[in-house]
Length: 445
Image (cartoon, rainbow, N blue to C red; front, side, top):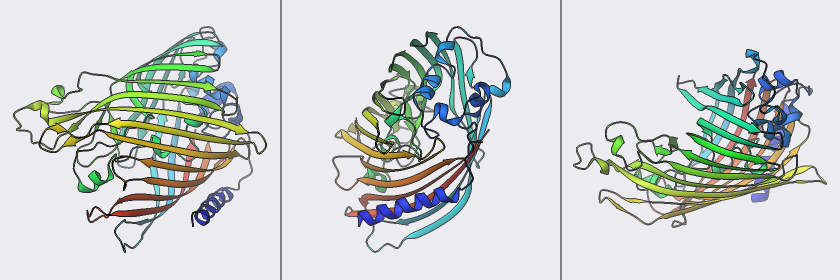
């Protein structure tokens, strides 16, 4: 049964690739402002967009300049080289079946504008200083700042120091820890750390906090040859009110937030990369020590303002590996992530047992050209090892087709199974199923 599903997954992704049948044009894509500035094509920095090769990764690590320009060449200030924009559309077909026995599938089809981004003053400003900013917008009118940082770079083309401050991307990975063609592996994404707790609607268990994304903080790093090490002090995370949800950057807001347990503390992250091959082979490791303040379900008239929040002290660790397979010219990637969180006993103001979690993925990518790639990935996550009914597995197949002029189409098909209590709240093992086909279209200029 699993084999048949996988064949249908791969066929759907290849069909999506065939739908984008415009002839290949090897012109600038990816971050088009840098392509304009240096006169480079996609294949210079990417094996297939958005994955970076060694040249592209070091260009980013050097502050969006050539490493031999650090501290030497004064950038030419052409505004067109520092601004870019992207808009995104999607076509989705999903079929969802709840865990309750006898549930019927619910099908949904939609075509949507999914927002966009503006990249302003993005690149090297002086021989040693670079800036990075991304402002995102959605159809609801919500504006978000994904990155907004200034960095200082000093050294030579083989060894250099990096110092960044602002809203930063916390992990700039290579190979297995880099951005995926069809999105981030599940172990790097947000999900309820206890699905049973989520079904019951309480706040005893936090949402999952991964190692990727952006956060306010300070980052210090050093690049020496093929190796990179970084240490970061970050503002940390909080969670939205209501049911467990995705972690949000920043400390609690509003009345009493200044007295929240972690209001004046930092999170810490350490990560390192080692480049094995120039086409995506590498090893990465990351470790995160954090604390997040979560609402306790008490009311505002509690006698102790501190008890409005409980403090989840959590840790995350991960290792990623990737290596090209020479015979078929494919890239094999894998990763493992584990962690520990606190839990909370409602209304009694005491901690429950710690929660351990883990996840992993395996992926095979095949670049047909420097603009077109296909691949498949298997994800597995156990948000709470103390429960047997909360495993999540996903099989995904995808095709990423870049036209070379800023226009890109990614087709993917995924089969997701979630072991969870039935939706009526009965604590019985069931499996919720979700099959989804997605065609994502983006235009980057």
